[in-house]
Image (cartoon, rainbow, N blue to C red; front, side, top):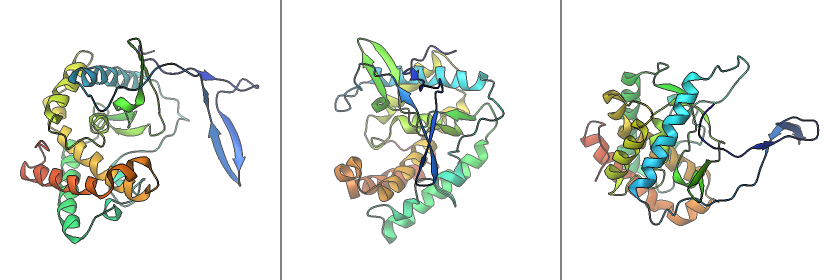
Length: 255
């Protein structure tokens, strides 16, 4: 068990929590959750305290994942190199992102190569890699009178535990307050679980990895609200982020 709160699953009439239905010859799995009160933190008025809370919740979830006796039948996709930025990217390839021309491609390709190198050096032992939420950002918290629920486990899969920080700053990685948010997230995380120096040194790589993933996501989700709001500007910001990442040898993306 974990003190992290999530919406309760409502079983179907047969008592099953997952309903499988045939949709045009494909099996689709559906889950009905209870309706809970609350609203996500206001992303136009972000505070360090918000990221501290998020860090604590993330640590509790990682503790649960490390200690969970996973059933042999449990399967879930991975956010490893191969399925993120490699040959079988789950959200498409960043080179197909909006506004990625030859100049952008050159810089982003160098950044992606450095991400790959840093990941390989870091390794994927069980203390560093396991089941993660993979989209654990403030938009996926529902807060009601101080009570916090975690929602939206659609992207939950296997990845590096510290990748969850990259997800925490999705779409706002270029903000100059990033170092402050990172410190707050780590402060909250360390309240429940330790963070080794090697893990902390990888946070910039996971921010860069997530940023490239989102460039790809925007390219394959041109219909999305996020794409309409930020569009090519996000790629331009990604270029500046990548240049800082490269100059630091993969240790910082901060402005």
